[in-house]
Amino acid sequence: MEFTTIPHPAPLPSDTRTEALKNPGFGTLFSDHMVTVDYDEAKGGWHSATLGPRGPIALDPAAAVLHYAQEIFEGMKAYRQPDGGIALFRPDANARRFNASADRLAMPHVPEELFVEAIRQLLSVDGEWFPSVEGGSLYLRPFMIATEAFLGVRPAKQYKFIVIASPAGNYFKSGAPAVSLWVSDYTRAAPGGTGAAKCGGNYAASLVPTREAFERGHDQVLFLDAAEKKWIEELGGMNLFFVFDDGSVVTPPLTGTILPGITRDSLITLLREEGLTVREEPYSIDQWRADAESGKLLETMACGTAAVVTPVGKVTAEDYEFTIGSGGPGQITSKIREKLVSIQTGTVADTHGWVMRV
Ligand SMILES: *Cc1c(COP(=O)(O)O)cnc(C)c1O
Image (tube, rainbow, N blue to C red; front, top):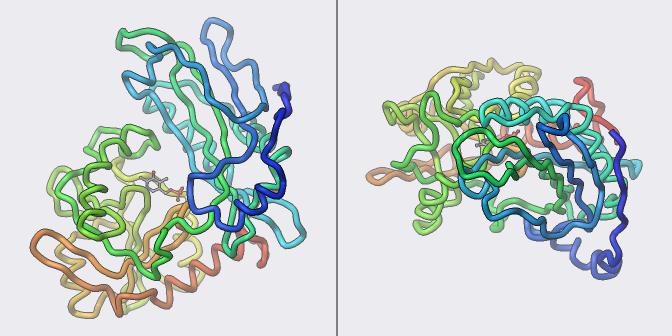
């Protein structure tokens, strides 16, 4: 597909940008441009691909996304390489997951080539937006919304696919060495629901428990399964791994209520390469607590694109609390984080075909 390019009439001055990139935080600073592609069932699908200035988008007040939340998104990062080039990490996996989410939300597929090309286009003009801080990257947010003005309840016939970019420093403001979790009584996803789709609706439902966790002084919410409130599922936006003293690692299986993280999938491979036995099997909150207290459980890590690999230090519920290991980052967690980041930033060879130069 041909892209129309509209250069930004007044990009952020380079000295202002340089200053902002010294302390980008997470999700508040944005690059100059964005990509938009429109979809209209009546016009044969995707059309009008545009690389233009980032700015507000006009929507009819009856646009379906504003009423029925027909929306999906992806989260990925571009990494500056040692030779100054730019690389993406498994963008094909993001494209495939995006289309799996589209299926669940009754939305059209974005062809994989168009998904990756949109990101390439954006990076071709906003390549100067990489943070100058250690561990910095350019976070990319592709998303799709239903734009058709129609209040009846059925899948829309018009959509917009958009990609924006946000320079990212550390995800956790505190920069804490280990996060503390709040075990929520609210659930995130029920069997047959949208838990495996990356959609805004899942996040909307997680905001009350997230606020509850913050108010109690914790960093993240732990969600248990909706049916029995017994099995560990995931955090609001990260998957979990449990490391035991016998060299085995457990992560909850993808049964439809958990988001299939690309970091999760990558870690399964990397942990196995370290000689660990990784099992995808259900793990209960009671067993976790017992194993942490007996010392059988050595480490717990949370993983996702934004925060990469983060140790879990403490777990708190209404009537109990327990600490994982020493409460700080464990050996395996630190090692595997380092290994993943080295592949992403190009300081070790990519032997898996995960890194795509753009
Ligand atoms: C995006 C996301 C993850 C992590 O996925 P990655 O591909 O590793 O970034 C985990 N859980 C939820 C709910 C998510 O939305």
